Image 1: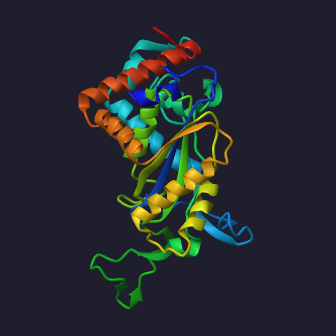
Image 2: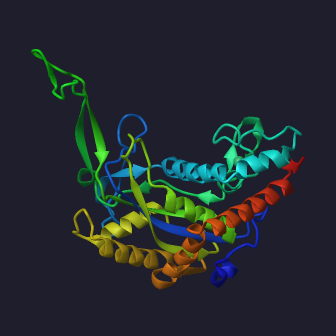
Length: 330
Ligand SMILES: [Zn+2]
């Protein structure tokens, strides 16, 4: 798998970091009204508008790190359950304290050996901890706050569909700020010391996760569009710098941005920023990126190949967890 990029991958997940990084550059674009908030209000940050005009400060919507990783982890974990990975781990392994492994539960009871525990890490009380191999930072909307949100009143009408009863008008409504559709949040998802299997796991989670933030049934849809993969021997530019660079390159363009313009400007921004990062890298965009994604999709869309890959991946993370003395065979 991914033979062309063999030199950038580890053959299996190593115990000690070895300066191999796969950076996946994603445009996360809202596909419906979304709500990214922590305490009642949408998350907003005051930051410089672009790299060019360093004194102009604007407010931008922020998609916090956890708001990105949690749904992506849950997507992967759901599949681990559906295809029996968690059950088979539970049946075969004990923890190092010689306890039978219980059900692996996100943020509560990590099993320590499944792909999610090993790749995304955990730190729960006396269950120990595993450093995440995924680095994600908060993502910032390209346009200013004023252009990228709207305020709506949510009504709760009576049975007859009206807001009045007798002479009274219901006060059953509330106001909520929403992120508008088609607002892009550029975000770099970094996987340290990728193996072909762990890299595909992260890609799959990005492809499949379609809902972020506070949500009611069908809202909160977000589409992840992968614009580049950068294999490097170190860390690269931040999400904020990428957003600011894009702000400069898009100039006066208004929302919604034309998809082809957004894509080409993002490629341009990446190519320019990566040169300033002082790392050795291979930038995969355009045709080579399409080929890489086709290779991934060939496995992800074929049930037999998919199951074989998921089993190989969990073998790899179990071997890693055994070597780290987190779990042992029954
Ligand atoms: Zn687990």
